[in-house]
Image 1: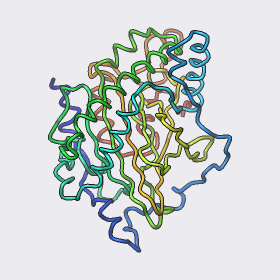
Image 2: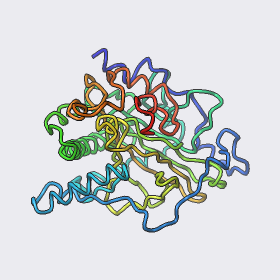
Image 3: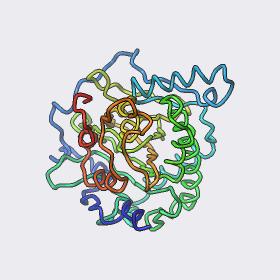
Length: 361
């Protein structure tokens, strides 16, 4: 239990900053300096329509063996070449998804004073505000978020869970469980592709940590000068992202350019996190991504992050380094979590700290 508490306490948290939604509502003519990014950071966007992330059909992955093998191969290629894919026919009920969308839109629509009751606190990573702000000088993201630890259930800190809308807690509970189920199946499929024991992979994540980050990106009149979410790779196992409204903004780095992602209707956007890159010894890649903002419309999204059980060692899977050298360090999950939450978002610098072979960069 003491180790579990490390996930949410005594980790430094994030420095308090101004609420961006409130800032944006003031009809700004000039954007505060800390949000303005150098032109070099607003890099070139690819406009090639051919560059679209792969689509994986979970129904085929779970069903007829004739389709299963082909879909497994698609999943392998997606994780190896892209680090991202869209998951369709995932089995999560449309009712649960739509209710989750409705509730989080209602939450962000509440008066600021109501939302402040759930504000992030010193030495906690949960709550409403911004994350990964570790200095008074760093550039800030044009967005607010609500981050909650949702699994295992015993780790929930309900003081951060909104009671408005009144259905929020029940909705997130259902959504959380559904996504945990989908993630475990994907992880077993990944294990199959890597040639490692499926049950072993499942046992590393079956009591794992799930965090849900609900993002609100207000419109910005100078959208080409700010970033909604700083470029980064996810320091977790797998992330499942749900687009809440019709406004797009997710971009991934591919071949040195930023590729806009066009979410398929009803799909989850899934990405490989740093932990899966480490566990696969570099066979699968976590990819840098970012969120840009719209000059006229708000954008909302929900990211569910899935990490291994607290007692798991973070390092290359033993089966993958019997004949090949380890390309990454191995450390306790406790050490890894401390490393993650005390770092700012900055490309793949966190993963770089785990590398033994810098040529893999």
